[in-house]
Image (cartoon, rainbow, N blue to C red; front, side, top):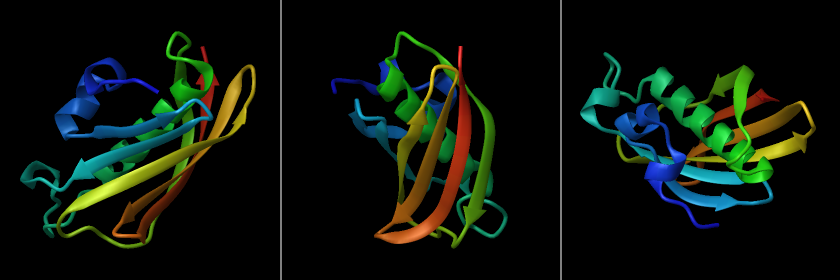
Length: 128
C-alpha cells in the first residue's frame, strides 16, 4: 500500500517521531519509534506514554488500512501490558485488526525490540 508519513500520521505522532514502515489492506500496520531524549522517563527508559502512543498510532493505522483512509475511526478502549523497558534503540509496533465490523473494530498490537516483547495491547475502535 502506498503511503507517506505526512498522509497517514497525525501531527502528534510525527512530533513523537513515529515512522510508518508498512501498511497492509488486510488491516496490518508496522510503525517504528526511535528512543530520543524527549521520550525518556526519569529512569532514562522510553516513557510508558510514548509506548502507548506508538501502540495507539499503529492500531489506528491498522484500522484505516482495513476500512480505507476515507473512513474514520477512533479509539474507544485500549488495554496494554508492559513486559520490559526500552533503554536504547528502536521499537517496532505491529498492529492487526482482529475483527472489522460495521460499527467497531477490535485490534491487537505488540511492541517489539530485536524480537523481544516490550508490550502487548488490545483495543476497540469505533467507526465514525
